[in-house]
Amino acid sequence: MPPNKKRTVKEKEKTETGRVRGLKQAASGYGRKTALLEEAITQMNAGKYGRASASLKELLAMDPHNMEARRLFATLHLRLGSLIPAKQAFDSLIDEAFARQDYWLAESLLREYLAAGPRCVPYLEKLGSIYQDKGQILDAVAEYAKAIDILIEDSDLEDPRHAARLYQQIRSLAPASPSAIRLNRYFDPQTGELIA
Image (cartoon, rainbow, N blue to C red):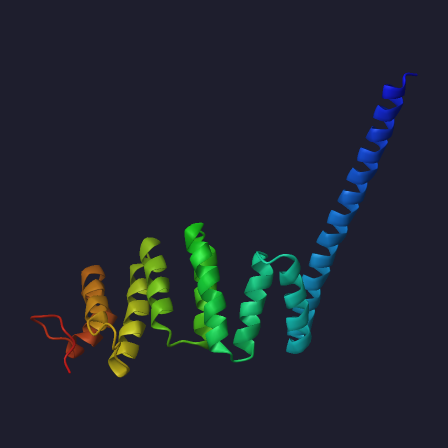
C-alpha cells in the first residue's frame, strides 16, 4: 500500500475518533444541562431556592440562551419576592416571545408575573393587547380597566394622559361594556380626560 494511502487511513481513524469523542462530549453536555434543569425544578418545588439558584446559574453559564432555565430563574425571583429582578428577567423573555410572535408564551409569562405583581400597568396593557389581537375584546377591556384603576390611584407622572388614552381605547372597543360604564364617572364626557 502506498504511504499516502496509509496516512489517509490513519487520518480517517483520527477524524472518526475525534468525531465520536466530540459527540460523547456534546451528549454529556446535553445530559448535564438536563440534569441541572431537573435538579433546579426539584429544588424549587421543595422550597430550596438557594440550591435551585445554584443549579440555574451553572446551567445558564453553560447555555445563556436556555429559555427554560431563564424562565425558571425569573420564576425563582418571583417566589423570593424580588419583583425588580423578576421583572427584568420577564421583560427580556416577553420581548423575545413577542419578537418570535409566540403569543401563547407571552401571555403565559405575563399572567405568571401579574399573579405576583398585579399592579404592573405595562404588563396589563400587553396582556390586553394580546386579548385584543385574539378577538377577546371583553378580556382586553378588563385588562385595560385594571390598568386605568391603578393609574387613577397612582398617576403616571411621565405620561399624564396615559389613563385617558386607555379609556379611549376601551370606549372604541366596547363602549357599552361594564368596564366602560364603570369608568365613565372618572373621565370628562367632552374631552375624555381624567377628572382630577
